[in-house]
Image 1 (cartoon, rainbow, N blue to C red):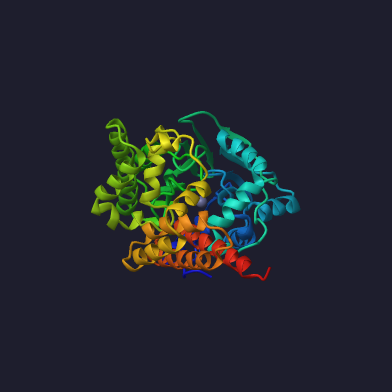
Image 2 (image 1 turned 90 degrees about the horizontal axis):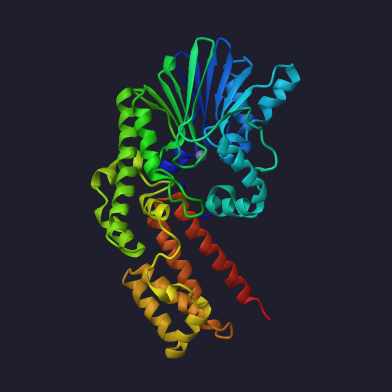
Length: 429
Ligand SMILES: [Zn+2]
């Protein structure tokens, strides 16, 4: 179903082979999110497990290269695609009678696991929308929030850090918020390697994701700048290919810091000028610099700049975002639409929507169609069906021009739901 995945999003999903660097001592395994394994004289250190359905694949790929026991596990954050695919590793430890590894995470990761337990069904519902083009419809959740491998070493508070040594290698772990409030990143000086988790992915940062809670643009920039000070030669991102070479690593971190500062500061400036969201959003689209638009690291394959504007705004603003008191306690959309339809018939709206569609004003056409779709009686089946069909057509048209995987899935899902409604309407009574 839907359009083919772009090359950029295939990279985000890790559809390329595993590899090693630093003479086979660092193993890089992309399976949706990336796992990085450090093979030390004292045993293995694993930075991030994959999502549960790829756990066996990741395990097999690691075991093809080394058979040493796992001594430490580090969770970059507690998302399903970074901390849940531990099964085969733990099974092996039990079978071989090895000691359990230390599991390192930030204290907010434990809160996240608790949150997942109370919002299990909700997250499943969200994920079905966000990932529908790769996970299919109607499938059961691939991850149960009720089974987790609990952290044993817990970083606490802001700006916390933790270090340990194993074999000849030092592992330095830092907490900085960005995509999540539980994120930590790793610096291994002897391997000149940084593991970032989702603070770096092969797309514009996933900030302002329409389904997700608040994320942190300014702190994200600060994290990038702290990482840049390490002068790393390798950067293992949360998703996408390994970044190699001091210049490339520095450039990726710098441009990401710069764009996060830009979004944050330009939104803040406009808040201080007394502007409301709509004005801020459209002005921000106008002023987005070419250097960001063109940069490889910032292509909007997954998250995108348009979503980032929401994130920066929401950081400082409440839900009353239009500045129009009409919106404070609004009527139901269905009642509003019915009043519009009293002024002019559905046919007039439909004809106007078609005109807008032919003029290429797709978004405006959608707003007009919604008046019919929301307000029309199901007895008006012919015009309602025409309106729904045109809406599907427009959503599909928008998909063609959409780069963001998340936005594409929202549009595709909307079209799918309308098609389901059309089927219902066509059933004989
Ligand atoms: Zn991720």
